[in-house]
Image (cartoon, rainbow, N blue to C red; front, side, top):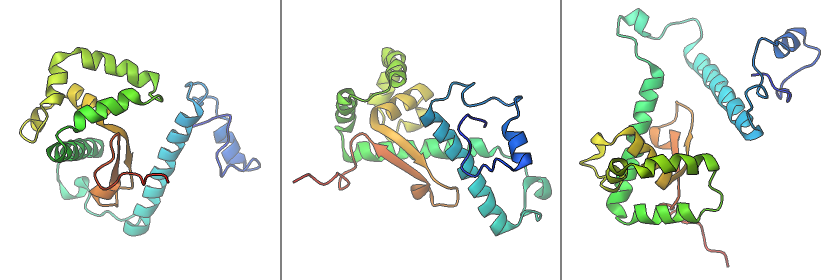
Length: 197
C-alpha cells in the first residue's frame, strides 16, 4: 500500500521499486484516510503474511506441491473461513471456561469497561445498538457451555466487547493457545499485574 511514509526497505534509486511506489492507480493510505496506527497495523499484517510465506517456502519449497486440494481431488476449503471458525470457537470456549470459574466475571468486566477512560468512540457507538437489543443482551448474560452453540453473531460481538480488550493473532505455525492471545479487561486469576510498592 502506498503512503507518503516510505516502507522501511525502500531504496529511492531502485527504478522498479520507485515505479511501483509512485503508481498513482493504487490507492494510498492517505486516500483511504488511514490514521498512522491503522497504517502501522496494515503494514504489520503485510509483513506477517510475507514472513509466513517465506517460512512456508523454506519448509515446503515453492515449486513442489504438498497435497493441495487440486492435486488430491479433495473439495477446496476457504482458509479464511477455517481461521475465523476456529478463532470463534476458541474465543467462546475461553470465555465460557472463565465464566465457569468466575461467575461474576461479566459484571466486573462491564464495570471495568465503563470505568476505562480510553474507550474509542467507535466502540462506544457499536455498544449502543447491541445493548439496545434485549435478545442479544440475554444471550450474553445466559452464556454457558450448554448455550454457546446458539450464540448469535451480535451476542458474540457484545461478549467480546465486554470481556476482551484485544485479541492478538500470531503465526499459523504456533499452537492455537499461543497463536491466539487474549488481553482480558479483567486479568485471568494468577495473571494479575504485581502491585506497586
